[in-house]
Length: 101
Image (cartoon, rainbow, N blue to C red; front, top):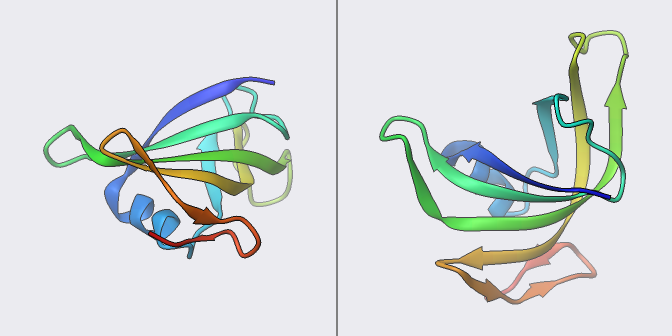
């Protein structure tokens, strides 16, 4: 199993942070696999700077080579393991996969 650090545009990042989005559409140049760990890092494309948030998650499903998904891309589902703000872990409720600060 691998660990991946991924820039995540701030609008999409906040959807993940708020518990509304639990999937990513990505170029599969890293050969994402179930069980891999991803760190979704808040990224602000306009200023080309990282924000202060980060989400550690485990990939639970990978869909690739399917109608409607461009060759070389995949959609992966994930469960959030940890929310991180300014380098400090926050508490999350693992049962609902939503967080509580």
